[in-house]
Length: 116
Image (cartoon, rainbow, N blue to C red; front, side, top):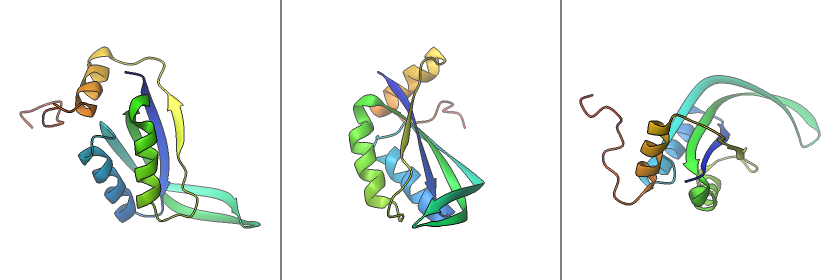
C-alpha cells in the first residue's frame, strides 16, 4: 500500500462531517481528522477573500485516490474544492498496517482500540 494524506478544506462542520463520514463508511479513507477554526485567505474571482473553514486530513492509499477524489467532488459544496495530495514517505508500521486493513474489503470495526 502506498499511503497518502489528502487535504481538503470545508466551509463548515456539517459539510466536513458529511464528507468524513462518507469516505470512511465507503472505505475510501481509513481515517479523517477534522480541524475546526482554520482561517483561509485566498483570491477568488479577482478579490481577496477570507473564510473560516474546517480542514480535513484524509488518510488513504494511492489505490483509492481516484475514487476518493470523485466522491469528495460530488459531496463538496465549493465550486473548486481544495483536494491536495501529500505522499507519506514513512510511518509507524502498525498504523500503516491498520490503514491497509481499513481500506480492504474484510476490515473490522475501524477502531484501533476495540475496548473503547
